[in-house]
Amino acid sequence: METFAITIDRGAVEPASAQLKAALRRLIDTGVIEPGDRLPTVRAFADRLLLAPNTVARAYRELEHEAYLVGRGRAGTFVAPKPPRAQREPDLDDLAVGYLARTCAIGVDADEAVDAVRRVASQHPPA
Image (cartoon, rainbow, N blue to C red; front, side):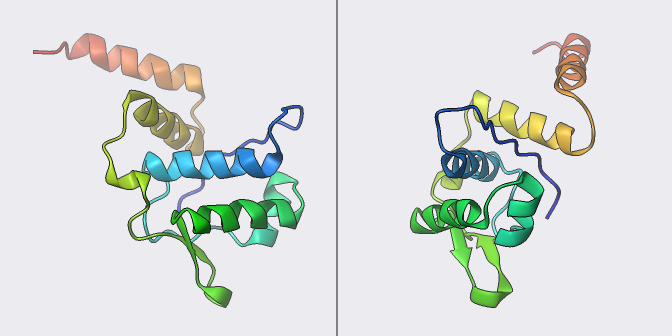
């Protein structure tokens, strides 16, 4: 599993577990996290995000209930072989989120990533 960036807005009205759940769903929907990928343990993810373990566990449980994740006991938590939304074609926003998440994972900031798209688009106009 590649490293992916998730940030939790502690000042948001939305609970941290809901923010984490939405972020994971978005990463799965855009293919940043792929079917069969193992997620970090609840404790490791909680430490990484500076959250309570119960907050991460709740997000994982809800995503399991929605068939995005599969818990395999001591083996860990994995992206389901066929997550519900991964069966549909992603829209432009989904693709943009995936692109930015991947560029962020390799240390490229959003402005540089957008500039790269503009540069490539100007060199390769549509037919």
